[in-house]
Image 1 (cartoon, one colour):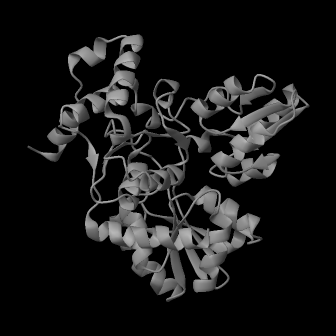
Image 2 (cartoon, helix red, strand yellow):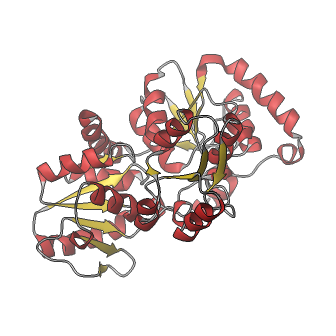
Image 3 (cartoon, one colour):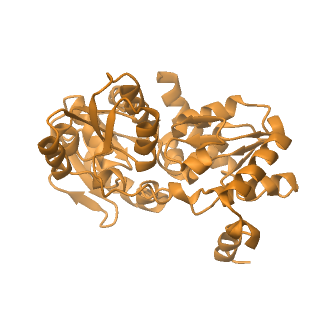
Length: 366
C-alpha cells in the first residue's frame, strides 16, 4: 500500500459516522469516554470547534497540553485535539508506552509546513558561509519534529509566543545571531520588542533559497519566511475601521500578526495572554480581537458582560484545526475500544531525542 493510500484510508470514516446526528455522536462519545475512564486523556487546543472541545479534559495551547499529557501517566491513549505538530510534541514528551492519536491526519498547520528539513539543510551552509559560526537556530513550537530536532542538534531551542523574548535573550548569550523559524512575524515582533532595529533583521526565503533585502555585519536576526495563514489576514485597515466605528474599542492581537498590525494595536500577546486579558477586562469594555475565530466566539459567549468582535469580521476559523470534528473524534474512541487504535503519531527515536533537546533547553529557562 502506498503512502497516499495509507493517508486516505486513515481518514476514511464508516458511513454511519457521516450520517449520524450530532446528538447521537455526542451521546456515543460520552459513553465511550466513560467506558475508557483513565485509560484515555483528551487535551483540546483553544482553537478547536465547540463540538469537540466540550469533551476535552484540559484546554490550552500546544506545549501546555503536551506537558500535561506527559504528566498524565495513567492514560494509555492520548487523543490530541489539535494539529499534527502538537501531537508530535506530545509523543516526544510522553512515555514509550503511551500512544498519541490525532483523530484526523489531515489536521496540519500551514505555518509548520512552511519550514521543512530539506529547505533548512539547504539554507544552513549558505547562512554559515555568510556569517560564520555565529548563528543559533531557534524555532517556534509551531514547527515539525524535524525542525525542532535540527535546532536541538545545533545547540538551539524552541520558543512559545509567551516566552519568545526570554528565549531570544538566552539565544544571544550563546551566539551573536539567531535564525528564527518558521514564523517571521513572531520573530520580528519579538526582536522589535527587545529593541532590535528592523534593519538588523533580514528575511530568508526558503523557496528561492536566498536572502530578501540587505544583510550586514549588524544583522542580528534571520527571519524564516513563514507565517500563520489565519493571523496574517488581520490588517491595518481592520484596525482603522473598528476605531472609526467604535471610539471605545481596544485592539488585542496575537504576535503572529504582522509587525504593522501589532504596532497599531493596544495589546499584543499569546493565546493565554489574550484569554487572561479578556477575563480581567472591566465589564462594559469593548474589544476587537485578532486571533482564531473559534476562540474569539468562545470568549464572546463566555463574557456577555463585554462587547467582543473579531478584528476581521470576514475571518474564517483555522481550516486545518477544524479537521478535527465530532465524527472523527468519536470514531477514534471506537477504534480504541475495539483494540485497533488509528492515526497513532510516532516520532522516530533519534528525531525525538534531538527535538527533546530543543524543548528541554526552553523548559530549563522557563
